[in-house]
Image (tube, rainbow, N blue to C red):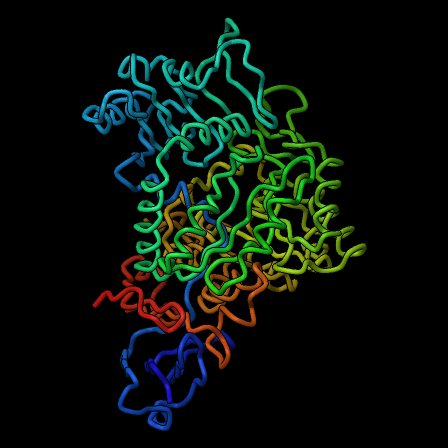
Length: 542
C-alpha cells in the first residue's frame, strides 16, 4: 500500500503540455503510480496519508540548474547585505548603515551592485568605501559576481599592494596614475572574494546552508546544481565539506549536484574523489565547471568581432584561458568520462566551446554522469545551434538574465548580434535540450520569474511591450519542463527526476496558480503550498 497519495485536478506530469486530474501514488521515496483520482483507493489503507489539493497545480520538483549556493545562502543572511544601489555613494552609505553596529574588525560584506545601472554608470573606487570604513575591511561583490570592490583596509588584510601578482584570468583596475582603484575583475575578483569568505566559521556556514535550503523548499526547489564560481582551484565556493556534513546528518532537504572548478592543469583528483564518495540519492558530483569568458556588459565576454562600443581598437573581449588550454583540460575530463559545464557568453566562446565538445563526443562518447553543458550562452552564431544539438550539448540558460537590461545587448553588441539573444524557441525547435536556472545570487532565485520571463520576455513591470525578441518565447509547459526535467537531464538523472512517472523519486511541488492557464503576469503572485522531497513534505505553506 502507498505511504502517501497526492491528488489534484491539475497535475502536470511533464510528459505532455496539459494538466489532468490525477493521483500521484507514493511508496517510500518513489512514485509507484499516477492514476485517475477515482482509482486512488486501490493503493490506500489506514496508514496512507492522502492530500487532496483541489485546483492547485502539481508538478515535479523544481530544479535550479545553475546556482552558486554558498553565495546565494550567504548574502540574504545576517552576515552580509544584498543591494544594487543607484550610485557608488549610495552603495557605500547603505553598507555603512548595514555594518556600523557589527563587532570591530568584522568584514563588511555585500553583493549586488551593478555600475551599468547607476547614475552615472561608472566603476567605483576604494575611496568612497574608505570614507566610511577607514579601519574596517569592506568587500562588495558585484551583482553579476564577476567584479569585487574593496576598500584600502580590505586590500591590506588580503596582502594586496601595487606589486601584487595578478591571479589567472583576472584584471586590476588602475587610475590615471597607474594605482590600484580597489576594483578587481573576473578571476581576480573571484579569487579574493573566496579568500574573504573562507575565514567564516564552518558551523556558521552550515547554519547558513540549512536556512537557505529551507528557503529553496519554500520556493518549490527540490534540486540544485551548485556551480563553481572561480577559475582558481580551491576558491570555487563549492563547499563539498558542508554539503557532505549536512548529508551525513540527514539534514539535506534539497538534492545537491556539485560542479567544482576544473583545474587549469587538468587535475581530476577532486572530482574523481567526490564522484566515488557522493553516490546517495541526495548528493552527487556529476561533473566540473570552467570559465571561457566573462560578461559582455564589462567587455570581458569573448566575441568574434569587436564590440559595437569598443573601449580600444579591436576590442573583442578575451578568453579567460587560451582556447587550446580549454580544449586540453576538457578532453582530459572527457577521456575520464567526466561531464564539463563551460561558462560561455560571447559568440567566440560559444563557438569554440561547441568545437571542443564536438571533439570530445567524437573521441570519447558521452560522459558517465550528466551531460556536457554550455552555461549562459547570451549571444551566438545561428549555425552553432545545430552544432550544439549534434554534439549533445545542453543549453543551461537563465531566463531572468534577459530582462536585467534589454538595452544593453544592442549598446554593446550592435543591433545585428542583439537580434539573436537567448534563443529559447530556436533551441527547442532545433532539438537542443534546455535546463533553466537562476545563476543566483546574480539574480534572485525566483522560479515564478523564470517561467514568466521565458514565456513573455518582459520584466515584472511589463517592459518591453510585446516582449524582447518575442519570436524566441516558449510556452508555459515548455518553461516548466526546462525548470524540472531540464535540470535532471543536465545532471544525468532524467530517469529519476523531472517528471511524475512510476519509478521516479517522489519530488513534487504544489503551487496555488496554474502557469499553463493563468495570465503569465499573475505568476509573480504565485505561492508554493507544499514541497515534497523523496515523498517527505519539507515545506507546508498552508
